[in-house]
Length: 89
Image (tube, rainbow, N blue to C red):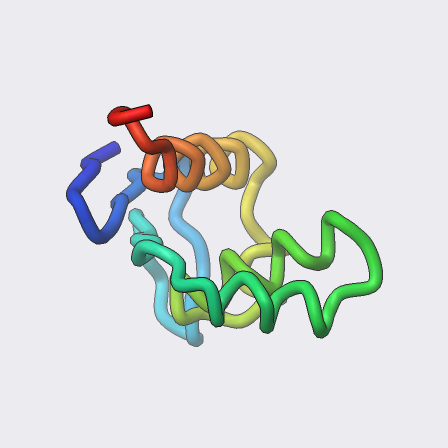
């Protein structure tokens, strides 16, 4: 995992499809308030809200994230929470 101020890049344990391209890592950009609101507006439950948000931040389809092995999705979750954590508080 590579953490920067505006994004996190996660190395996958297995290659995956993202926008019809095989990839071995995914990056999530830092979310804006608009990203959070859009994800909440289109979601039926907490899991769908998170999928919508991560898909937007990674610029991939929800179905691409649903195709990840669970270990890699868990890595994305960990990367996201490290990205949005405010160490100054």
